[in-house]
Length: 428
Image 1: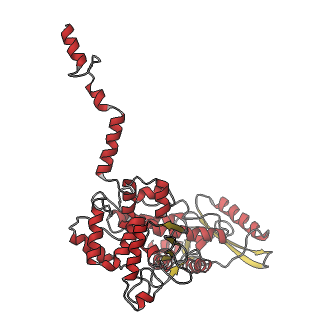
Image 2: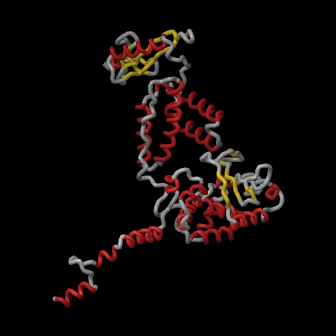
Image 3: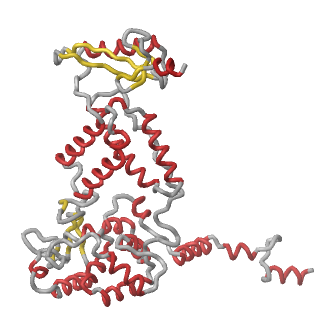
């Protein structure tokens, strides 16, 4: 009995199918639905073109008609014959193409794609032909990752990043191979409403009152980084935008006479510089005299030799670009010295700038122009409203609404403990 069941299905074309077709070119699949296969000559190439589809929610007759329609399109030259590719080969070639065409410019971006492909997408989908990946395959992968997220082994935002790359790949394949559907297009991301990068306890930002002490302690412990940190808090610039700033040379980014900084490059990893910013928008920041004085003092204090000879505003001890992790240790030691209970990273400079700008009553348009945030939503994401700021704002609402005056009015229309009540008592 057991042997009979095993012999009922045979493995062909990467599927378990019935040994005999239900209709010409139509085989029932063990997992449900039908596999259809046929070949026809494409008049555009003069070569045989294979049609192979896995169909669900159809009967044998319907599957046969779908096959004939697909073969008719081949014979009419409406289908371009392309060599079938497996996901692993196609995804790697797509990455190379994107790098060549400049869609992925930074080393960090290339490394991210390579990491996600190598460790997550290729192990899951690598053996599939790109035209044979189904939405059910993607949903099954998502379900496994959702279980890991629920167990706390994976951040949902991390998986959503992987899914975003998969969607880029399947969308490109859908267009390039003229497929009839994109298997990942309508797969939803994991819910992130209960996963918070920044919390009430860990906002990764300083209050306005904490900033002076942080800067003073940074200047005392790490004076070589003070100017860079001051510039970060004052403008909200990303460290990756400050590291490649040039103070001199053929194309300087610091215009000393004008008091201007041009933000037009970005540094991700190693010594590779991307000649644009993260948002692909260039900025021209006009700096006040006090901040320019801090930068001048920094340049004058650079040690002679490689650092003094470097064109960079914030060169490493070897005269090249600083490491992305250069500020990590100084920030941690300053936090420890101040006995702060929250963790502050270099990214906190960008978040703190938003809060200082709001406290200084700088308009949102100007704030976004300085920080480089493209949208109001992104500006709000990087903002942390302080309790005092909220309390003061609500107090203004209470004052304008005259809530205290309203509370003093009695049910008879008089004022509690006031003149109207006294007159009523006297009249009675």
